[in-house]
Image (tube, rainbow, N blue to C red):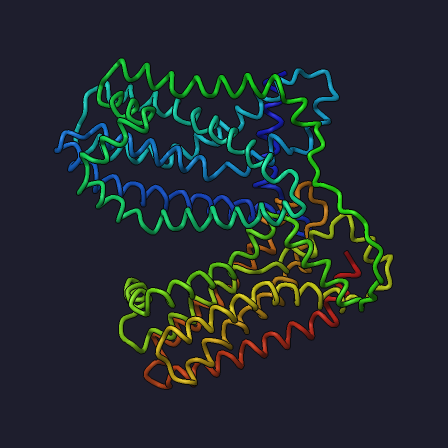
Length: 534
């Protein structure tokens, strides 16, 4: 029974990632699976290279200072942190709020087997996360220092044990998150905002890895004392990798005991946790005058409610706005120096490149907000409701485009104003900083809707799969990247000596506006026919 439950869980995970998109031919579906696989492989390769470079800078100096165990402890800490940040919200939704909990409990399946299948599925996922950190760490240490056989034994057992500690920690935090948001009236919005906060915390950690590595080299003894005193599981793992059999046993205890305790507690209380009604407190009804809204206003309100009521939708398709505002606040507080240093890192030196770099950054934030790309697919089983109501297709398209423009455009306008205040620029440059990102956002709203009409996915099982892996979403993102990269490269390599940036920006703005007009005309005719044929 346990084997069957695990196989079903893994098949569901595979279906979520690699499921063929409705509306594509079989060849297109196979091509999409290959594209998704290449995207995951590219991301994994980038992370492996980043971790490998970081470990290369730390291994020899720490080992030379007699702190080889600290190198292993830091690698273990990064691995567990990576696992935690990658699966904490997944644990909350897939264990405590999973949709099939009541269905499984209605069958003659012991709760302990359901819990075991969930935990083992998370454990396999955490092994993938752990491999991204610990494999390059072990390879770098082995190549640089040629350790003895106990290093390989300790690292292999640590690779098997540390994900168990991460799984236990993830389940505990996921349970606390469930309790925290259970009685909130707007828990989906809170969950989405929490995901965004976690994302920016991860990005802050990623951007400062080099600084942390430098601090580790400069203050190795002090940090080693903190690990030994405050983080005993990682200290034991570090000593085990250096050949200590006692600490190898202690590492096993530190990792196995929490997981066993979590499994025992969940097995005993899973039925109560899965069936308890933890809904928010009811709002007392107060009679008020009803307000009549136009079809466009009602549909727009529905679209906004869907985005802010679905955390994964908000996190995956509306991250650009908060990102732009945070960047604007950072530049306003720390001054233009930080932006000049960042642009110089990409080879854009000189005062003349500062405004183009700002526009590129804001346009990138615009393509990260594309709620319209999965909006038709999300109608899915509810499409008949729209057709049963006297709603024009043009009003529906307006609502989906305008929701995207509002969600992304308002933060972009705020961020543009912050950049204009913080940076010295002419009136023409300020106009480009404000107008071009907004035009890019409008283009993304139209582009996402057009692509979703061409590549709908209406027979979905999970809304998360539509938001994260559908063909229209990926095509919109890659199309937006091309929209940024092509003009930037064209001006940098061909037109910078022919015309000023202000003139080029005006031409780009005209092209974007024409693109919006053409897509608007398509939606009014071809888009309507396409929607009626769904």
